[in-house]
Image (cartoon, rainbow, N blue to C red; front, side):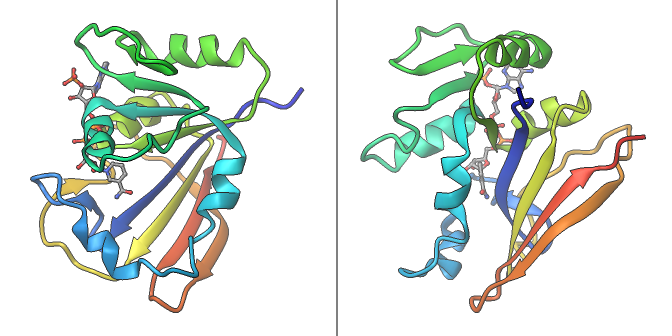
Length: 178
Ligand SMILES: NC(=O)c1ccc[n+]([C@@H]2O[C@H](COP(=O)([O-])OP(=O)(O)OC[C@H]3O[C@@H](n4cnc5c(N)ncnc54)[C@H](OP(=O)(O)O)[C@@H]3O)[C@@H](O)[C@H]2O)c1
C-alpha cells in the first residue's frame, strides 16, 4: 500500500508572502479566471484529509457558504481545546502523532492547507513530501511569510513547473532525501 503523502499546495506572492500581516488575501483575486483553476480540482481529488492552522480555518469560515472541505477529514491545529464540529477536529498534540493517527487508515494524500505556522510545524519535522507553490505576480512588501526562519536547510528537486497566461507560475518541489 502506498504511503499517504503530505502535500502543501499554496499561493504566495513573488516576495514570499501568503497574506498581508492583517490576513488580507484579496490580492489572490488578480489571478482569478472563470476558466482556470490552476490544477486545484485535480489536486483536491487526490486528497481526503486536510490539516490547517486555526487562523486559516477562521479565514475560510469568514468567506461563508459551504465549508470547502465538507466530506474530507479536517484537522484544525489549535492550542485551545475545542469540540469537534462534524468532520472538523481540533488538534493540539504533536504532528507525528497526528500523521500516525491519520495513516492508520488507508486513504488518499494529506493536504496541509496552511498557514505558515501549520506548514512550519510539519516542515521542521521533515514530514512534508511535496510543496506546490503558485507564485502570484505581485510584490506585497510585507505580510505573513510562506516559510518561517528555520534552523535546517532543505534541498529540493523541482518536479513540475507550469506557467499560466495570468502570470501565475506553479512550481512543485519534493525534498531531496539525504
Ligand atoms: N495564500 C494562500 O494560499 C493561503 C493559504 C492558507 C492560509 N493563508 C493565510 O494565512 C494566514 C494564516 O497563517 P498563519 O501562519 O498566521 O496561521 P495558521 O497557521 O493558519 O494558524 C496558526 C494557529 O495554529 C495553531 N497552532 C500553531 N502551531 C500549533 C501547534 N504546535 N499546536 C497546536 N496548534 C498550533 C494556533 O492556534 P490557536 O491560536 O488557536 O492556539 C495558531 O494561532 C491567513 O491570513 C490565511 O488566509 C493563505
